[in-house]
Image (cartoon, rainbow over all chains, first blue to last red; front, side):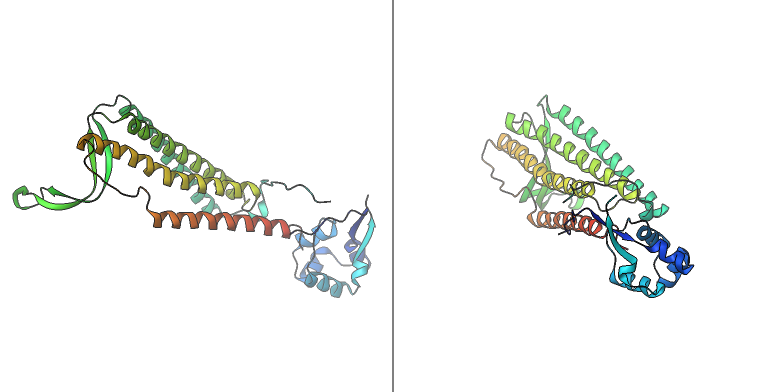
Amino acid sequence: MAPAEIEDGTDVHCRLDELLEERGLTLTRLAEIVGVTVVNLSVLKNDRARAIRFSTLQAICRALDCEIGELLVLRPRG
Amino acid sequence: MLLPMQTNTTPNTAHAIKLADRVSLWLFAAAGAVIAAWVAWSAVTRIIEVLPNRDVAVLATFAGTPAEAPIGPDGAPVPVALDQAVLTVPALPVASQWAIVIQQLVLMVAVIVGVAALVWLIRNVARGVVFCRTNTVLVATAGFVGLAGFIAVPFFGNMAANGGFAVLSERTFDNVIMSVDPFALVLWAFAVALLCTVFSIGERLQRDTEGLV
């Protein structure tokens, strides 16, 4: 069964863009470090991902030296 | 909110298949189209041949009925067990005549629908769309129409043959045989059910993992 869609007026926003800029990294470089394709990282960066593996999340947070809460935040739906 | 189920048959370049595979798929589609055209042509020809109901050739299956064949020295007759033979019947009973017409129509429809569904499936797969609601429906349609034809075509053929036997023997020859091979039927049904299951599980997995990074 597919998980239910949550209807509370918020979206999960990925702050990958901001974190990359702060650390002076590019998406391509992060893809190399993390071992995830640029296409998949781009999906995540543009908030088009619908699910994320724990392993991907862990690898990105380790590469960017950040907490999960810094990478993913809830924001009001635009 | 649960979103309504959507059918996505948009070309997917990420899952595009190799050119060689695409060519093979289209060759299969072309072969299917040729087979469908040939079956339709022979079905129409057979119906035209049967409608006047004069000296109708009917394929009959026997249950090992003893007969003689000229296969001995200098064409001497040798006893053989008859498995299949073509009977020429002066005039078939109306029910048998229509059984042949229905048999040919069922055959034609089953082959055309089956081939059309498979060609549509090939088109989707060649565009990189493998698991989707449309493909599951196409596989199920081709499978179940094929199964229906597999049962109905010999059934109506058997009806026609029994009419032929009744006319030729003046209702004195009993030839009780099963029109469908049950072992083959079970195997086909299993294969069709398996394919439908694979496609519907594939479709669900694809939906569940869409957007997963």
